[in-house]
Image 1: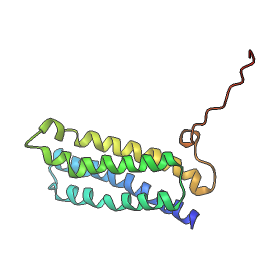
Image 2: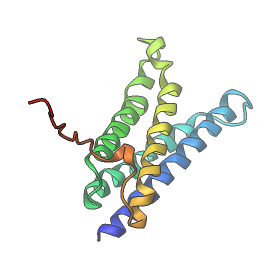
Image 3: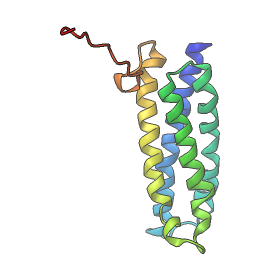
Length: 144
């Protein structure tokens, strides 16, 4: 179950990353190419919650390191702010609403970091050093 959970987590992370890339393309189709409405972008944006929810469950089932659990929750929080809070502040706080595409970059960066960390764990190796808990080694006092 552990290995399956880790592969599911990795798959959900890659699916989320692909969704973010498609979101950027769809936004470009609306803003630059004038080829479609925002509806597809909006619908896909809300569907991206599904792989995130899968990630939140499998990060625990897969017994990933605590740092990956925290980053997964951070990704979920950033996504929630972007999709369900910031975008709806267009009238009341347009400068804050303008952070919507910036948060997409944060989503992508966090997702990429999580995918890179999940890859070796799904294969059965240890997490990258950046995802390992940092333990301080005691220093020996030679002078007394």
